[in-house]
Amino acid sequence: MNRIIHLKLSSDSPEELTDFYGSVFEWEIERLPRPPESWRMISDGGQGINSSIHKSEGLHVDRGISLVISVDSLDETAGRIRKAGGRTVHESIRAFGNRYLYCRDPDGNMICLVELGE
Image (cartoon, rainbow, N blue to C red):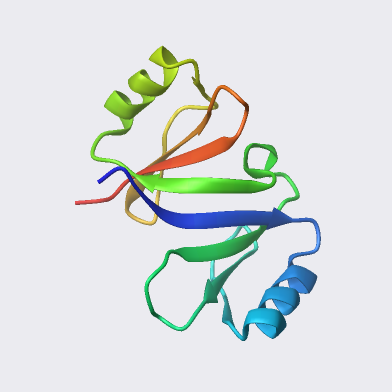
C-alpha cells in the first residue's frame, strides 16, 4: 500500500474546471451523486491514477490539490506523519465504506489518507 491512488482538485467554479479538463484532455466527466458537489474525471482507462474535482466552498481542509494515499492503518501512518514534522487536520471520518484522515506535510501540503473498507 502507501500508494497514491487519487488526485483531488478543489475549485470555486467546478463546472468551469470540469469543462476545461473535459475539453482539453477529452476526459469523460461524471457528476457524483452525493454531496459535497463532486465530479469524477475519467481518462482512457490506461495506467495512471484517478482524479476528481470538488466544490471548494466550505471545504477549507481540501482547498487546492491534495494527494490521496491508500494506507494499511490510518493511526500508524498519522503517527509517522506527526513524528516526521507533519500534522493531522481533524479526527478520522468514515465515508463510502472507508476511513479518511486529512493531514498536512511540514510544508503545509494536503494529504488525504484512506484506509480502504473491509
